[in-house]
Image 1: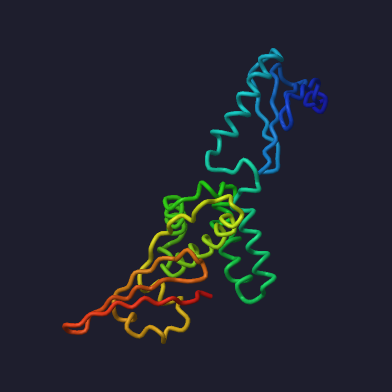
Image 2: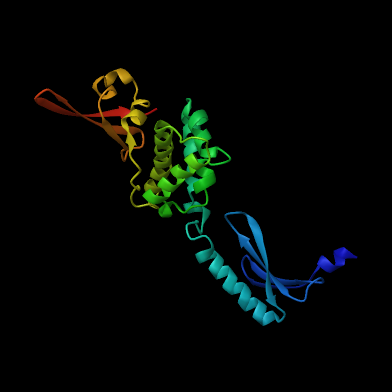
Length: 236
C-alpha cells in the first residue's frame, strides 16, 4: 500500500504558488512553492510537525528563495534575458537571411549558449564582469580558447538582445563589453579590402552602442608623419 503512504492527507494554501501539505509517510509538513521561471514546483520538508510552525517555515523559505536563492535571476520572466533573446530571434527570422540560422546557434547552443547561461538572468543584472565570466566559461569548456573573433560575435549578439530591453525601458544603459584585438574585428569586417593598413598594424576593437556596427581605431605611423583613422563598418 505504498501509494496510500505518499498520498496527501492534509493541505493548507498559504498564498498564490505556496502551500504546505502532509503525506501518510512522514510526520513532517512539506512545502510546495511554484517557480515561475523554471515552471515547476519546488518541494521541501519544513521539518515541522505543527501546522502553524510549518506555515512560518514555508513563508520564510519562499521569501529567501525569491530574494536570495537566485540573486541575479529575474523575478518576472518579462525582464529575463531569455524573453528578449527569443524576441530577437523572432525579429531576425522575420527579416530572413543567414542570421536566423548561424547566430541563433550561439543563443541556443545546449551546453553553453547565451540563453543557457543568461536565460534566467534579469537583464539589469548583466554587467561587464558577468560577460567576462561567460567568455571565460566558453574557454574552460573547450580544449583550447575560442578565437577572439568568435567571442566578439557572442558579445555582438548579447548587445543586440540587451538593446531590446533598453528600447522597452527595462534597462537604462548597455553594459560595456570586453574589448578584442585587431585579429578579432578584422575577421568580421566586410569587406576586408577596406582596411589594408590595419592588416599589419595594431588596432583595438570594441562593440559600439549600435550592435550592428563596429568601431575600428587604426593608429599607424609613416616615418615622421602619423595618421589616425576611424571607420564604421557593418557587421553582418
